[in-house]
Amino acid sequence: MLLKIIIATMTMLMFSCQSGNIRQPDQENTPSQKNEQIEFDFIHTKQDCKVAMDSEKKIFHKKTFCLNTNGDDIKSTTEISGMVAIAIEQLNTALADPRNSKITVAYFSFSNKNIQRKFCELSSKGVPIRVFLDQGSGPKNGLPGQIDDLVMNNPDCRDMNGNLNVTLSYLGGNTTAGAGGIWQLHHNKFLMIETPNNKVQFNFSSGNLSTFGTSLHLDHWVMIKASENSNLIRAHKCVIQGLESAVIKSKEPDVKAIAVGKNYILEREKCFDEKNVIPRQSLPDTEAQIANALAAEEIAPLFSPNNNKYVEKSFIESLNKIPSGGYIYIAIQHFLHPGVSSALIKAAGRGVDVRIVMDDDALRGESDVPGVDLMIKKLVLIQGIQIRFAETNKLAGGGGALMHNKFAILNGEFTFSGAGHYTNAAMNVNWENFYFSKNKKLLVAYSKYFNELWTESVDFKYTASKGIEPSDQPNGLGSHFLKSID
Image (cartoon, rainbow, N blue to C red):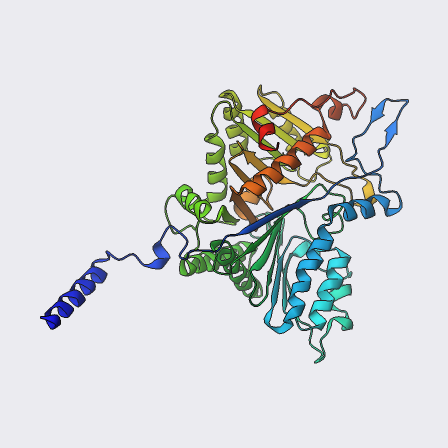
């Protein structure tokens, strides 16, 4: 009798597998493992700049307008934000077990000298470091790349066996339509630190690891601790796998940028399928995938380039769902995406409180992305949309200060943030990382930061006249929003 039961059970299992009734792990629409709670933290640059004014012309600037006299402003804002100190503290954790730790950096640019010096020390102790940067950060006109002097060409960075433990690659950088037909920058912004017996330390940001990105620019960082088995960390390990594959592809003779981009997508998404990462392109209903990721971990990662426009579609859909009486508060530098613009106009039309903080350079035509000023002038005429401008000094330090944030607060329920601007290039063809999050700590932090940015910004009339016409006090933000930060 027992033998008959065993045989019957085995037969049922075989039939079930053959009929496809048992779903394989890589087809699930939920993270494959129960993850430990993810820890979130938030930090942003803070301005304490000298306020320039011309009393005769009655021009007054907010504290975000940095003079950068003899470097004083850079020093003070760096110390106030504390971002560099925190990054170095995180990196130091790899020193406890150098050979079994690993650091990965994927950024557009990396010119911060203090963090470079820390990388040099870590390399000399044997910590493996992988760095991916945009082509624009590499050698130009016979000059060294951004990290060449202090890291790549520095003998002090070699370990006791004479090995440099830093591997550097450049990706993207194709900004001419004729060379592959695509504007493709490597614009990812994340840092991952893996050490034995610890949660993975993972940071993503609006700012680069640059001198100004960690000081004069208005930027922010989200700092996370998560299990290596979490959907978030699995996703970024797949991104790294895709970047490695793209590096190999880029070394083929006469290869075009568009082919390298396609290779990156293919390898990344193949890894997503194997590791059951969500959201991913091979599964239907991105919206449901994002909801499942948020339910499991309070954060859902999205990436470009992509084949199905899931970044822009999911963001636009989230804007379309904000009800009358709700709010959409945004801080963004470059804004050219017509689909996002249309969604905001529709939201304002149905009674959503829409506020946007931008860099005043964009309105004055001083932005490095042409056409942003025209988008602003279109939106500022829409009833229900209010735009204010953070005053930044294009001449500060010789490189200029920027309002460089990219985040949206969606009715106090979600945030959408990351490396990319609201442009077609960012959401579809550049190499970028984006995130939806519903973590309460992040929501409050983003909200407090937006309140600070709004208060320290000026209106359209003041910005357009370059301060000749005085700005009114900032309009009061919505009570629904203000209650969230009490």
